[in-house]
Image (cartoon, rainbow, N blue to C red):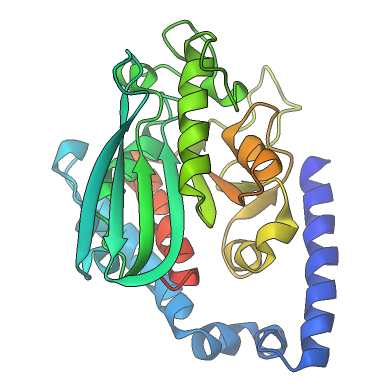
Length: 298
């Protein structure tokens, strides 16, 4: 039902946008009139990213099994072509939950994107991709990368924190609360301070379980709390892309907290753990590449 409502929502939203843009003579008319030609001709960079997707998959599958030997350029060379400056700083500094945010700045002014990987420590592709993205070289704008957000969970292949709490149900957090609340509070405060144009939250899913058949099928899906905030991007990722749109991120998630309380658009990617790790990481990186291309950062 949730998926059906999501499709109804995006259909109504984009039908209205298309009608408005047609009256205004905008470029959406070209894209909607001929999706194939529109993708290739009206937006060369997005077309290139889409064309490179197959190549990215093939190269990723040729990589060695040990992820410690992977480099970002193995998956997406376009993400490593520019010169970028790097900064690092701590959040929750001086506590047992201290973590490092990597900042990659392009030579030109531009948007900013905040990437979070590994809120759930056992969702390996999310934090593996985010760790590789610490090498990203945007031509314009700034990319913040926090990964793995749940250090304990990643180190122990565990979804939850040391106190067995779900970090993604504890935002915006509490600096004086239990560990999940404190970690969430430090992340939330940093996102608020950075005030990015978009937050990307990288996750994975096992898909519907026999024990919970009513659970939504999140395989290769994007979750957006407020489609209207980033309608054009959602169109690129779903209608023009190969991802399924899902709504209603859970209460206490970073997606819902920053979009509702800070007004910062957020998108969550879910890849399917039924695929091999290399392919899942490739999907995560291609997704980020497409987002950064959309924002003119590459």
